[in-house]
Length: 493
Image (cartoon, rainbow, N blue to C red; front, side, top):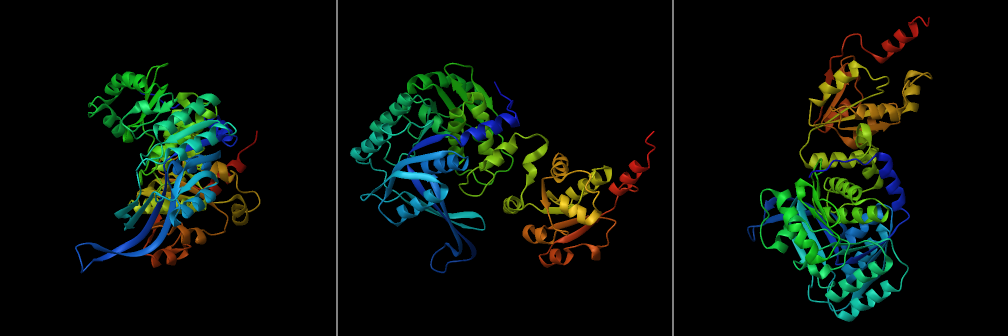
């Protein structure tokens, strides 16, 4: 059966606070993800391939290390166990762990294999080629055994995540030893499996394959009636793997949850904008582990993980999810639309990568009325996404006098965010939005018809980058100042 979200914003806030008190262990195949960003202007004269003119470079953590990075970003203390090569890429990997706040003291350098590394070259936001460095031969058993023994003798954590990418580290002995430690500690052990032999993970609390991995396990494609077919095969899979719960991520169809103790349920996807699916599974298992360790039910933990994945796929590259973003997903009144200036710049970058036309309008928006609603509705028709920039309380006082605003900035932002025509709201503190316009560089700047175009702040900037100014006719006799005067003139008797 399909399930609906019942988690309150308050309950999620409690879980997020609890995340900061947790210690999580992540064990598995670690990787270094690198991105070279460039542009293609011509083909090579030497071969039928594009010539990429290189620009920016970036790197991040992949595989089990990305799970650790997500957990650390959500506030928990994270200890990572894995292997890297004794090479420059291994050094860069450890630097990235330090920057992410991950305890990588148990990431061992080995001399006989390279650091698993994936280098992606992108041009015009499209991947041109990916270069891989890896050695998937089984690792010397003594290395894994030593790490398991260190784990067994260490201070217990609140959950263990095993991230298997089939790179040779997670031998049957390592898996058995890590799962036994989790049982000894009495904490949940969650596994992201890559092997088609689920019995390798016997005794774990949760297995989280994606639908394609599950099809490899059962040796066939799942039927069109996905929910019924998954429910049917889940019973035997739970027995084969000897685990408590099977959670299957279904891409755009959400997640299915199957347990020995309860009826199966399905959670629809929470994806709003898809930019990059890299690391979505890592986000799911990290959020699941933290939620269960924080005392959430499976029902609630799955919903938290589903929302976290929805945030992750809206970001470029392998990206982490911040607690504020996750809390906003459960907030009433569109609070997830209310962004800081830095967050807005990132959001605009994603929109541009999807060829979205960005519209911005600004003002005090004090005492929201039908004139405002009309303006915003018409402004939203000028492009694909509408940003509303509102003056801060201090800015309104400087512009309107000491008796304004009537409504505080956070409440004005919440009211605007609740409108379907509005895609994001940002508060700025200046008397004009000039600095914000420079940062956002909207395609269209909208103002009310009470302005002449030569009076619009930023009109020349907009023209410089090829944008336009649009003036929307006002609704007659509808203004905040007029409403205030009418209220003041009312007979108090």
